[in-house]
Image (cartoon, rainbow, N blue to C red; front, side, top):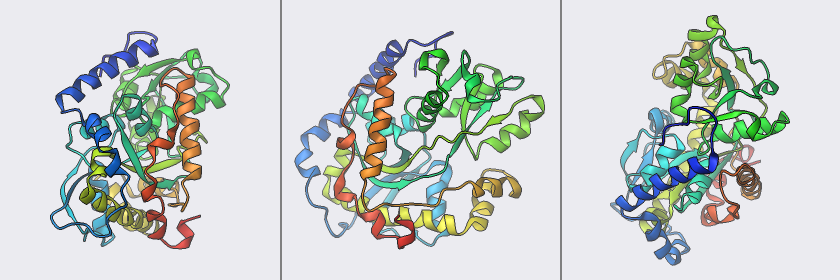
Length: 354
């Protein structure tokens, strides 16, 4: 990623350089996007009812989250081989892994598919989990004087346009009545946010609820604080490159994986104590009290039989990014592979469908 400007941000210049770097990477990785275009006919073929023997997928599992979830839930008997669970989570990293053909399926928010499309890489959404409660809050740098989103005017804000945190920030600015150019949007990826806050490179950064306890424990006494937001990042989704979905065997494996993904999230929601102990305490080094505070804010999984709400929200998000000059306008309907639409809902009890 190009280094962020010392002050201000020329969005189009920055994006042009970013797209240029990505395009170069695409050339080195064998132009997966071109392959997708060549296979559109097979990408629309009916899904196979059985996964062919020997089929393998490379699946993202950031910080071992997905693999551990399935193991604890007793759902690790997948009907295909997992070549590798990759420790990849951030949208830009997922897109790069898709391009290099080292990743077949990933769990992200709604923004990365929009960003991938803008960069010229075609991938499709295959499963949706609707989130109704905020997953993020805003953290301030140590010694800062910011207490509300209205105070963001003129401040340096950590901004990742290819990740959920980016759209949460843009929506929060809009709700606060601020234009995008009334603050300085500092281009970073989410894994740089904490360092940028600690060093004073930015005044504010969106953090996941799970990141806030450790940050406040270290910097709260030095004046760092958090600012809650009611902005919801609606979509938690699975997506895959078009060439993967054009491969009949891999597409069948993706379809077979979706019920496991949905059931795993239901299990986590229904077993908070075990999840807190095994994930947050043992792998994230949080205290039991901190883990419980995070779990209390957790979203109840919701896998709607229809993607209509998800598509509408994704269109609003793409339009918001276009309004700020971050992407070009387009119809997001092409991001959804509706062959998979009913699979997640069909795998869970009624209470997790509506």
